[in-house]
Image 1 (cartoon, helix red, strand yellow):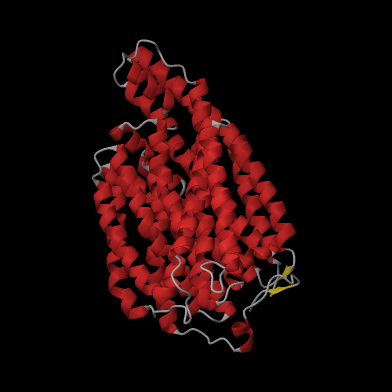
Image 2 (cartoon, helix red, strand yellow):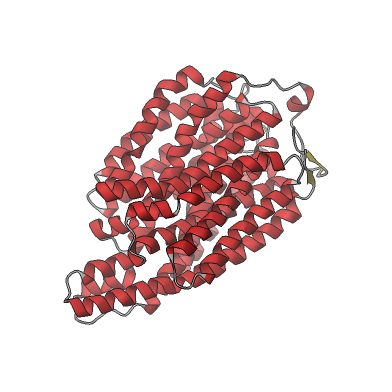
Length: 517
């Protein structure tokens, strides 16, 4: 079972056509189970911290900018290094890179759990991004090389995508349980029970693979790749938080200029770090864009809902996590179900259907004017179903266009789309939420200047300030702060819904040449 296409720009690797794929045996499926450990680790880490934002806000008292950086620095560094690390994994060995990343990730996570200040936590999150970039391209590229049969590969990618989206949704539940019983840093220690079995089983179950004819290491391409992603994402984030200005425009322009130089260098190289010619295919580009926008919708939603359920509705962390549990289950189920649907339905329609479900989730938030937990539960169920569908098909299309020998670099493109989507989801929707809060909150003049600043920036800051006030004024501040926070929910819902509708239309146009099989 494999995709067929009418798109002349989309070529299937010759090695795939010329040789009959070998069916994977029991050891391959055991290797897939082991590879799910780092997938779950990184995907949980992407969202568990968003759920810990209220506790971090109360404990470390960060300003609004620090709070966003605590969330954003990890996917920012990760996105900047995924392509170089994927290329290095192709050269030095994907399993080896997986092991190095696992060890580093575990060590830094322990340090992050006891970070004394917001600045220290931001630094630890940056290092986690470095080691996380070693992990993720290795997992998907190993799957690409272990499962050479297209039908089995699609099932394996469905499991991988289900683990990614399911882990992202599981983060709030695990975080809720931990935060109900331990301090905020406990969420970082989740990696320990995950990485220990990985380090033991990976050498036994996962075969090493690498590009048999790798090109030379190209430090300039690595620098240009990182220099493209980091200022570009930073500038977009600044644009969302500060508006149009030199502080946002200059990084974006710098990133675009370095990106132009990176593409130009790759086109001139005989054996480039990244084959940018893949983007000439509308199918490949459309699948990458669908991947990015689907994760944008998921992470942006979680950033909002984690704070709403705990700080507005008043649910405990565990109860709030349980509210999101059905969305986790639905995400996994739809990710696996879509493999069977792909035999009869074109991928363009499946990806578009997933993105339309994401739009329906945001519409539910818009219609849920009371902000009830049940309404948000339904919204996340729709969102989880959409992400499960669109992620499975888009990732399979991305990998199907690349030769197995360069699977690390191709996988890195998929992962980069995921991480850029995560950054933009938090930056754009989180910044809209913060802007609406600052515009509508009423902070009493009786507070100190520092307390007024904290209360005027974040809901957590207002709760801290209210704890120092008499009962009457404290109640007024809390009511104003919660109303101000929810005033941004409608704006976030509208933006998210419009983007998902546009993404669904884009998927139909770019993926329509690929037929079901």
